[in-house]
Image 1 (cartoon, one colour):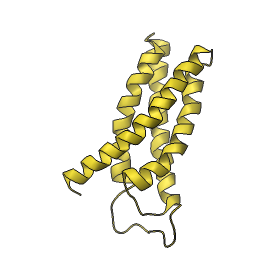
Image 2 (cartoon, one colour; image 1 turned 135 degrees about the horizontal axis):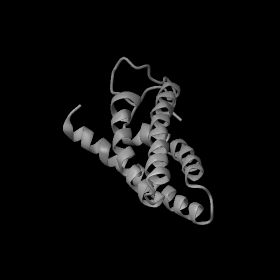
Image 3 (cartoon, helix red, strand yellow; image 1 turned 90 degrees about the vertical axis):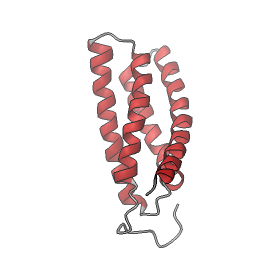
Image 4 (tube, helix red, strand yellow; image 1 turned 45 degrees about the vertical axis):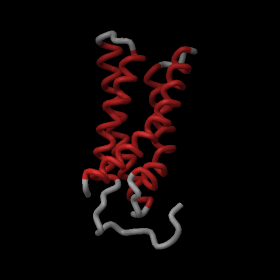
Length: 139
């Protein structure tokens, strides 16, 4: 895959991420401001974000024609890894070292976005021709 195609993927992925993370970050700030604990809030919103972005990233960002099931499993593993990085960083940086959780979470959104793009490009939605493809309409 050439650099132009990768740039297109990254831009589409970025648009999906900006829209999703923008809404979810505002929800995070609101929910923590009304008293929900930061790590619980992050956990709930993270699950919502994974569910809502899978189809956008599969079909639009990476234009992946493979089967939904295997791709979704890889997607969940990638985001599970991202969740663990997010949780550990909050525990260390906010809880142990005392940095404001709002800033820590804001920075993590950006760093995790890059990591998850790379995982999706090369592992979740690879362009290998050996992957099975759906034979009917892709939902």
